[in-house]
Length: 604
Image (cartoon, rainbow, N blue to C red; front, top):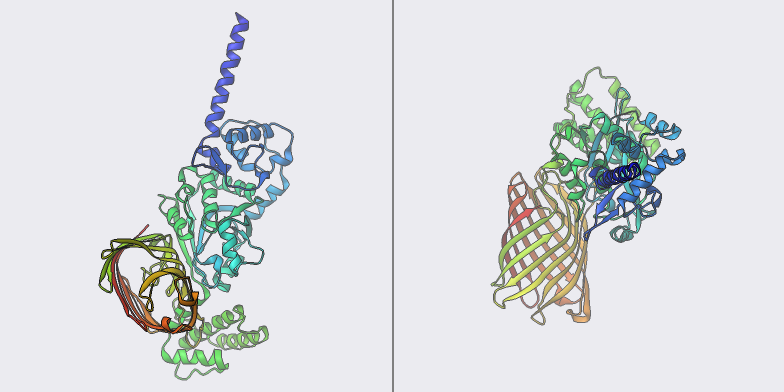
């Protein structure tokens, strides 16, 4: 009888322990700290690519086996491996699954001492149009420091692709789409991050302080230590910089469930919106404008005499302060000093010239015993107020009298006349914008156009800033052949560059020249190449966006030479709804094409 009771007790407690282990193995706490995601047809897969992150041979797909292997490891004498997983130790210890002590780990303790963590800040930098890896902006995390005085000595946590020097090439996009790069975490001082984004690339930085408990902060630091040496296949639109930060936050605060919101695509702007929508998660917001924006903000406050004086200093090294009072002189000199710093960082001013100019400016400034009067730029438009990245529109229109209905779907990101709040003025990034139509006369359903890529930057130039403007378009379009009077599909490309001028703070005027081409069996001789000239304006207001353009194309096959007029407008109903209208008229050699369309857009 006693024997049976002992056997029963052993089996009961073994079953109960195994059941508890199974429950924990499939709990959010464990799944997220070990970076599992559910597979579509059941089961789990790991998002961390490094084999060394998983202790069980089946650890990448079996959470329970990985949990058992982790418990066995902490019950062993393998202190070296234990020191690699302080976050797992904290989690298992707090949930009563292990009772052993954590060993002394010199490197891990040194890591914590160097950080001196006091909090976590989520960082968003806006788009950088001169680098294909940063077109959609970028997100990072900062581990705030207890050091007194400044957060410049804090450390930033960045997840990025190790791109082997292909950042600015076509291969970057290809490798990024197929996951050919390995991605990993890096830790660097925050002052270095500010120098890179604020100063070198002239990008705004938004800092969102997160409301985490001390236990969550400790767990986050421990988790960063765990994943800091891991590698994962990097995908430009999915497993990218922003997605892995979502998983890192989920690991220490499982109830957030941030990563599950990004199963299709992960765009940095959308991730900061997701963080912002978590009630009580963001406790404060701070704005760090770029160096260029700071200078332009100061220039806006100048009168004409101050501006002329500034130009003489930075262009001719002449100090002409005629009719300026002491405060006005001080503001001019401080702006001039910031501008020569900007020139030097941009490599437009040699070090020797920079030293001479900055010394002469500071010498003049030190002779004035007054404080400057200009306000510094302290506020901007919070990116969370921007429209969502994906868009769908439903429209009705007519082409040469033939009525059609159109549905357009765009995964990303922003057009020139979309609501500009939270985006760079004059910037456009459209990816895989697909338009389907039904033509009433023929009762025909067609793919009208696939905009593979539309990338534009209309950056206004003036006497101090002269960034070139560009407009790149790649698409497959249903095209009317004036010679055969038929429609067919053609691959089109256009690369334009030129100059943009700001008529005022809302209106940009541009003048560009382009190299254009088309390819397809539908065309005579299968292809043509040509040159184009175009001019237009872009106007963006609080509730309205307008764009007008005229373009003349000179094609190698004269039948494709044309003159095209475009006018489009949007009125913004809310953050994510807009009414849109567009008119096009193309004058061809044989037959002109005229089209107008009206519809409603929803951003999601």
